[in-house]
Length: 360
Image 1 (tube, rainbow, N blue to C red):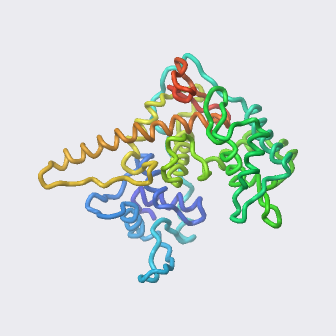
Image 2 (cartoon, rainbow, N blue to C red):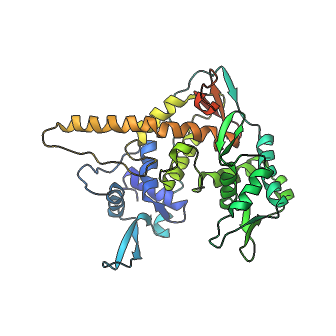
Image 3 (cartoon, rainbow, N blue to C red):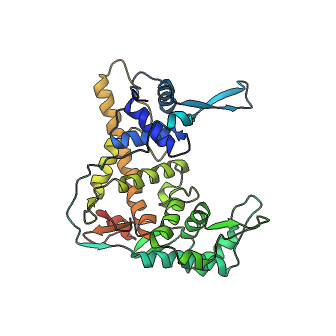
């Protein structure tokens, strides 16, 4: 363990806090975000995550999980997750992440944030609406019935496609909060699994401290694959959204602790591209560099990087904008700043900066 490479030690520490099992992609992205030394995969071919998994296995502290298949090959290895032994895990502590060196920016002309009391009233209002309907009926497959969701949307006085929160557009809030409440354990199926009901009385939730109340919904929204932050991204890979949310939450956690500090959206996007742009995409796919014999390797790499940069600015940059101005704003985690009103139909497009609130 003492002789492990930094990326392998980080993987072991992440596995320790996750019960001995760790996602290889999670290690890849987290290590890149933190600037940790990475394994040399320059001459590896095929799936980069599998090559990364092989490097972790060669470190001697991980093994792949065997799984059976119905195909000709019978038994294979699943390199998506790796596991370690509890006796090895005892030799490392929990991961300690350094503060990220994202530079501060000047305060915006105008800003907006939601106070904890307002956030909790939104959550309580949603729970009361579900209770008032007697729960949400489920289909045979276990999904909420469309008719029940429509009734809930009407009870909340939302539109099906979305609602505005302080001028910021929030798409499909009924689907978002229903899925999040299930993942957070706030809504659970009844005994015969015919409908979703509140897991505990509203009074029990109302008596909890603000951070506990809001963190439940925060966790739920961060893993809700049934919903995404902006309509333009509906064809992207759902699991990539969850990865992106985890990255964004980690970044917010590791910003300098001065709660008065503002950060530019442009600086955030550029910082993330420089750190993880060659490891992460909302499409779930990073195209490999094509190397032609008649093109200089450095020139080929530059062309590939420039193409990735252009696509990132059109896609990931916009997603970060909408992630900050939907669930993270709804829950009072960030205060958002702008210098002029947006010329588009919503204020999401006008955001230029953000800061983490005291609640965040």
